[in-house]
Image 1 (tube, rainbow, N blue to C red):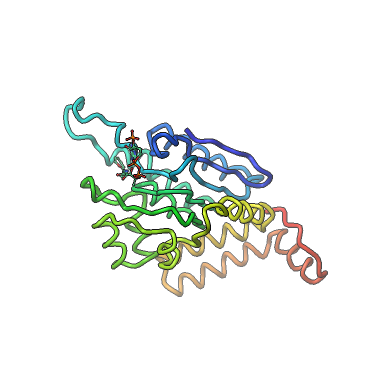
Image 2 (cartoon, rainbow, N blue to C red):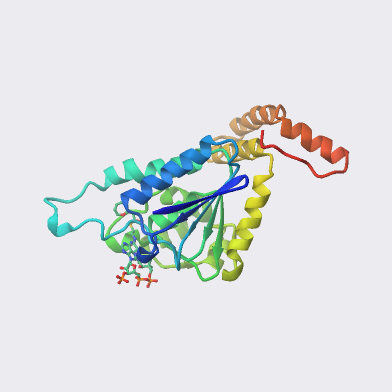
Length: 259
Ligand code: LHQ
């Protein structure tokens, strides 16, 4: 249900149930989690790119997965969230390397919010983000209530979550919900270019940067200044920092090893 490409220095995960608009069933959810955990554990993997096969990025949970007529009572969706979606979001956020998302088409429900959990989101101009949950009586999950409120503010977060209106890639970029909207035909080239850069980047420094920016969500300025001090101390001890300075002074391109 997902396709994994091992490129030099990075991996590409492609959600691969195009006939179901790459909606999540439990297998795809678990496979993606396992893939993220494996990428996190592999020092030779210095970044991850997430995208979708076919015309959609991901339509959220596969709503055909449960047949209400065959169930004794209402399902426990909390269980699904706890065992499948939450571990996935935590894995993406905890991984101390860049996670890029190339949103190639519609991103709805959990599909939209998994995209927003990634560090850098590029979207094809024809793509749309839809908080579809309200249409079926549910609550935005996969961190959506948190990330939307932080990225675009309460006013827009509530309107999107309560109406389910689609947001175009260009509006999403204008609002700061994603990094960039790019021409459909250019999406994968742009994403690959970013990945080639991250494959040769000072990965430890980028990972610490990710940790710091995420910690800012709950830290005071004083706590954050202390954290920056600690992380800079750590970054200053990496071989890549020594290499970066030496390359700069030597007026040559750095050769970062990601350590
Ligand atoms: C689908 C789906 C889909 C199955 C399109 N499932 N078949 C967490 C925990 C537990 C339970 C519940 O949920 C969650 C989190 C969630 O993600 S809730 C939100 C679930 N997602 C949605 O509500 C989105 C539903 N889909 C749509 O609104 C539309 O399909 C979008 C806007 C994604 C795309 O619209 P169109 O481009 O017009 O395509 P379409 O609607 O014609 O869909 C194409 C096919 O894909 C169609 O099947 P068919 O056999 O008629 O060709 C759809 O039924 C199927 N499909 N999404 N989530």
